Image (cartoon, rainbow over all chains, first blue to last red; front, side, top):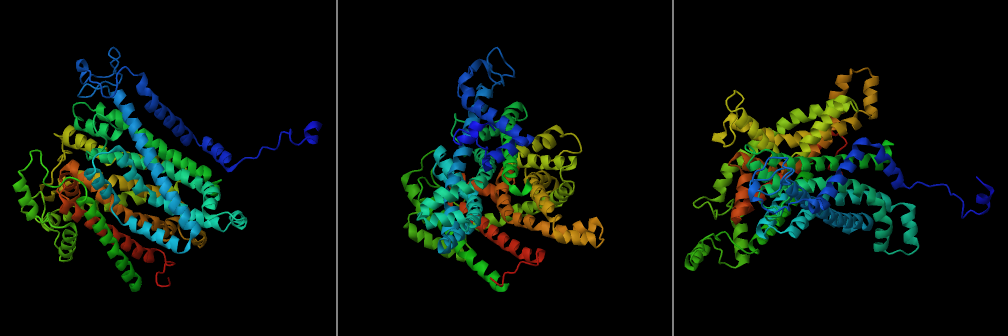
Length: 298
Length: 313
């Protein structure tokens, strides 16, 4: 320490405090499986979002001269070959990834919004509200919800917005339970009491004090929900209830590929590899985040 | 305990009623109907059809009629499979799906729980990593891919060997026809059970009473099997409730791939055909199954964990 830093504390290189998040981040990066997953996920996401812009073929363009082209066909620009209709497989896989990831993230966001709202309100307000909300969650648990998603998709048509809303409306239950549990322990903490004593309203306390403190648990659950949603979407696609042609998703590509599995297995293998890699990475990342944010295992 | 049991059943009934009501109005209030066809039917025929199935009654009356018939155990006529009542269809399909689901569940427990224990007892060794990674693979590969791959291997590539298995069909439940579907249905459960058992076993062997049992000089194997396993099984049993829901959704995929006449396939076909009564019936059965399984799970807790008491609530 120099004397100047002692005299003027404002300029001093203050002791670097490490927040919970910085600590968690450090531990996450130390976890090799989680780090690799994070890198792979980032690469897949970048490829899915920007990749199609740089490809010579678009996902719905038919190349009549190269139907069922075997990869790698550099001359015509079909790096992964084409499908039975002569559409570029790489472009379709990347575009399908865009849709699958988008459904996964949007539906999870819907689940997150509902789950966190219900969970924090039930946990913080307590009493009859808590009873009512949690009984409702219990009730929903004994409903075959996948059935309802299918019914919705069949009867309202294969609508992209409806799909992620419906999936999100199904996936929020566990989130609500977890968040409520966390909120119950937070509720009796001193800082919440202080906020209440200084006149904070219930919505303000929930938003400003409870929600930031449950975010850790929520993050872990989000990384584990996204792969579930992607799986559910691929399941809907398998039943023929996914997005409309010529739009596509990994689930639809896998379903198309499965139809010609015997003659042309790579139309199944390539999108399946992308999807399973993504699901693997999300699961490892979720496990890594849980370890990083869990003070018990330090 | 019996009062608890009665109370749970009493909660189950309004749940079922809510499922029925939501499902009924959801289907009736959406555009389209079971008699939409590629070639439009003449209006007169359509009117007759609608009258035949009471679709021209006011909605509330259809609803009341449906509930009354349901109480008599009558699920109504099928709109697509003419001359079949839903009750007949279900009586044919439900045993098939239940048998497959039950076999898959048993298979999954027999494989998954021991593997989970093996992984937990060797935590952070190579054996643990291999088992855990394999389990993760089972979770991330959807069973519709797994089903197709199994068909390709055992139905096509091994066609002329002794390992050949039928690629589909039911053949009145012949053993060979059951192997692939049951295996395919069981795989995701195996994976989940391995993960759950591993996690709970790691916690269980750290408990104080395990240390006591070891200190008494009991052999390790006995401590694991008699003391740790029982409490480690609680999360596994908890999983069995939602597992029913997995059986149902899993059976939709597996029965569609392997062409098995079970209720999962009926549901998919029924939804696509807008066969109102069929969809309703399978949904109601599904909800009833899940409610029953959740109750069964609660009762098993009492046996597994002596601390669980329902009477004192």
